Amino acid sequence: MRVYIRDTVCRLQFHPSFHRSIMALAARGGVLALVSLVVLFLAGQAAAVGKTGQVTVFWGRNKDEGSLREACDSGMYTMVIMSFLNVYGHGKYHLDLSGHPLHGIGDDIKHCQFNGVWVSLAVGGFDGDYSLPTNQSALDLFDHLWNSYFGGSRKGVPRPFGDAWLDGVDLFLERGMPAERYDVLALELAKHNIRGGPGKPLHLTATPRCFYPDTHVNRALATGIFERIHVRFYDDADCQVQLEKTWNQWTAAYPATRIYLGLPASEQTIGYIHPKNLYYGVIPIIQKADNYGGIMIWDRYSDKRTNYSSYAKQWA
Image (cartoon, rainbow, N blue to C red; front, top):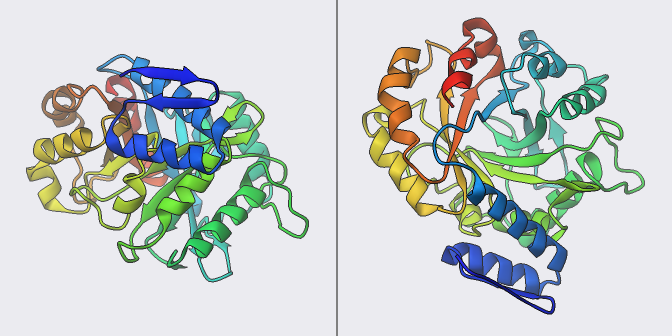
């Protein structure tokens, strides 16, 4: 990798998709966004190959999983992704946290962040009514996200978590057509300096199904600007059979992105890997990749019951 900086133009020799994306940002006037993106990329490349200690968990799918603050205070996670914003694209927006009261979550977010745990928001999900069929629908979703959860403050736009600013956006897409404009959403987030607050990067992630490519999110990932991809190696028995092959496809396809192994914490979920098999059979394979990122766990409710993260944390 070579970096050339001349005046305000930054020419980079990265993966082709990454190069196209930063040129698009520069063309749109997103110079600060471009610089921030390069910094995030370089930080990722500087990370040591092998064990990273990074564990991400999804929270918000069961009211009995406990509070967000409790999840962060467990010491098991480095990122918590709230799920889901599952209605958008038609001028309406709905946040579904499975009955968790919104009151107090803003303070929990700040508490988590103060203790070094990032808190992100997943858009999409298994249910709901969502799509981004046009450029404008993608820009409208960006506008909603920015003003409701990040650095914006447009009059008349409610902020569910008060003045708390989240750390990132995750694409967790289970529906839609391949041509939907999640790429426009991603680029718009990047253009706005990739920042959710003063001096705080906005971490752009995706959580696709295991088999490469995932057509729901492929167009967005082709921008090359995602910091992390959490690949869901569960809910499909074939994922385990072809784990090494599929893992290598993802890591090779996005060398500038940190790839996470997504696993279920519940023994009842297809794709559950016993901790012993994880340690001896899987960890040695996935940590060979230069862009290995860590482990993603689905989800906090199951993990609270099985304590699966206590193993993952040691080996991630």
